[in-house]
Every structure is written in structure tokens, then in C-alpha cells.
Amino acid sequence: MSPHSVRAVPLALLCLAAIAAAPHHVPGTDADHPRVKYADSLVSLNDRCAVRLNKLNPKIPAVYVNAQPIGFC
Picture 1: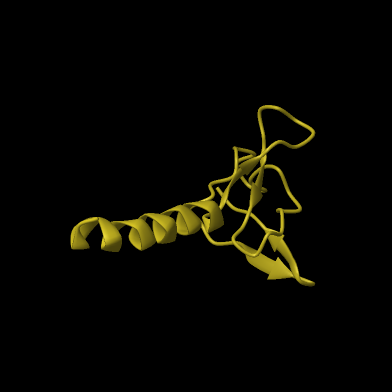
Picture 2: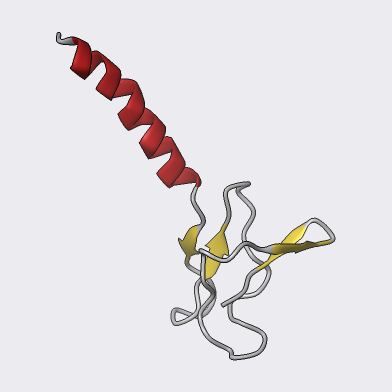
């Protein structure tokens, strides 16, 4: 095994772990408005933006109220 491939394996595993921990949509009660699961494994209480009523954006960090995440669009 070459030195480059030995270094590539841990790097690939690290990248996979970062992707798995990234916030992402999860199914909710409404198919058009999924909830967001955050890196801490908590799922947003809301399934849509409070102002525009759009789908939540997983790239925008949640605000925690009573230790529960609230998502934004």
C-alpha cells in the first residue's frame, strides 16, 4: 500500500463523518415541509419558516429554545 493511500483512508472517513453530522432534512408530517436534523441529533420543532412559511434551510443554524432547536429559512 502506498503512503498516499494510507493517508487517504482516514481523510475519507473524516469526510464521511462530517457529512453525516451536517444538518439535513428528515421526513415530517408534511411531505412538502421536512424537518431538519442537526449535528447534535436533535430535530427541529418546526417544519417551516415562521415568517414566509417556506421549507427550512439546513444551512442556517438553529436557535435553541428550552434546549430544543428552532429552524429558519
